[in-house]
Structures are given as structure tokens and as C-alpha cells.
Amino acid sequence: MRCATTGCSDAPQDSAMNLAQRASRFLSRHTDRRLLPLRGEVGVVSFSFDDAPMSACMAGAAVLERHGVRGTFYVAGGLTDGVEEGLACHSEAVLRRLVAEGHQLGCHSFSHVHVDRIPAASRREEFDRNAAFLGGLGVDLRTLDFAYPFGGVNVGAKHDCALRFRSSRATGGGTHVGTADLNALRTHRFYRSQPDGVSYEERLAVAAAQRGWLVVNTHEVQPDAGAFGCTAEDLSRAVGLALEAGCLVLTVGGALDHWMGAGR
Ligand SMILES: [Zn+2]
Image 1 (cartoon, rainbow, N blue to C red):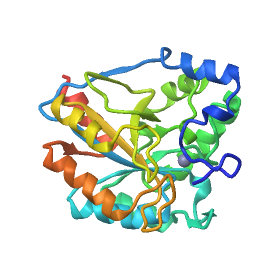
Image 2 (cartoon, rainbow, N blue to C red):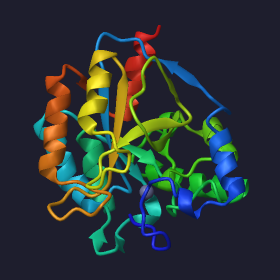
Image 3 (cartoon, protein in one colour):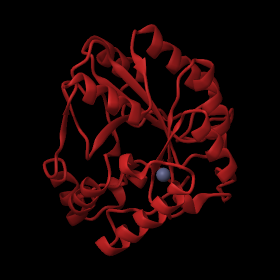
Image 4 (cartoon, rainbow, N blue to C red):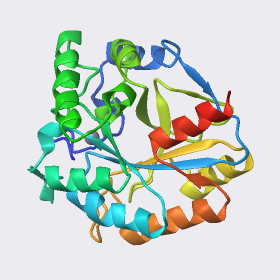
């Protein structure tokens, strides 16, 4: 959900970063890279929901299910049953339903913190605590995928996450073509606002034409979505366009299985 201090959500907070933080974020593009070759017959699109707001778990999941596909919900266990900025967060019951329906739950820290701004020991505690939470919901912790809260990645956080998670996802940056850095996956931010200045349609076209991988991230899915969410209608249109373009629509975990299988 929204970060109360920045009023922003899962987007790189460049304006709030000092020079050292900016430098570490920049450097992290070149450290701990683990490149996944993307060799397949068609493009892949993955839809992910950061924080797993209740509306995403209900309306968002329903949209995907109507199209016969599933999504990835990056969960911070500490937000369970909470309300932030008037938006209801997920409940354990609804997360269990998502798992039962074949959606994927990923890790998003436990307390929804900037993992790039806390000591390594605190990161470890956050990951341990959320792993315990997700493990209790039946998530396979051996193949846990992660999304950096607020897109906050730097050299230290990326290194720790590389050791811990199958993949770690940042925010923004667009379509992967040829390879993807598993420790800093890029996304299209499918928000009511368009922070990247590049449309979903453009990025989808690249994924389809070049057999790439487009990971989409958003938050709440409701009629009066805020700047970092979307409506069910827009989400449904996006999923429909991906399928019409001939892309596979897979969870992040499903896409990794797909690419790893195709690369053998
Ligand atoms: Zn978040």
C-alpha cells in the first residue's frame, strides 16, 4: 500500500534518495547479475500485484480467472487484515483461496519496508518472518520469488536477495528481451498514472514480436483506483490483449519454469 511518508507506492523513490543511495542503486544494475536466457517460441506476460490489497485478491484474481490465467501476489505478512489509506489489505483466508486457485504468492518483506535502507540483519529478520508466514499458507519456500518494496534495490539488498530468492523483482524498466536478470526483474508499472511514459501496448508489442517477457505490476484493482492501481476493466483489457498477441500469460514462477525449461 502507500508509504505514508512518501505518499508513493512501489516506485523508485529517487527524489527521497541521497547521493550514496542513488549510487548504490545504479551500481546494483551491474552486481549480482544472474541472467536467465529467454529462448521460447512466443512471448510471455506475467501480471503481479504488490501488497496484495483485498481488491486485487478478489477483483484482480477474478479477472485473471475469467481469462483462464493466474497471477502473482507479492505479500507482506505484516499488512494482513490491515487498512492503509482507506484500502483494505488481504486476509489469510483470501490468500489461502488464491493458493487453492493456482495463483502464486511471493515475498514482499514482512513489514513492507525499504529493504535497501535497513541493515543486513534486519533484512534477514524480515525475510525469515515473512517466510514463516507464507510457509504457513502452503507456499513452497524453496522456490520463493520476491519483489523489492517500493522498488528499493541497492548493492547490499540485491546481494542478500540473490542468495535467498529464486527471483527478485524491481519496478519499472520494461520488457525483457534475450535475457532477464533474475535478481532485478523489470516491470511495466500498470498504474492509473503512467510513470514510465511508455504504454503497456508498446511493451506488449515488444514482448510479442521479440519473444520476450513482460512482467506487469500494479496494486489495488477497483473502480476508484488510486494512482498506483487500476480498474478491473483496464486489467481485463490488458490480459485480453496479451492473449490476442499470442503471448502466454503465466505467473512469475510459471514463467521461470517455462523459460528454464525452454533454455535446456
Ligand atoms: Zn509494496
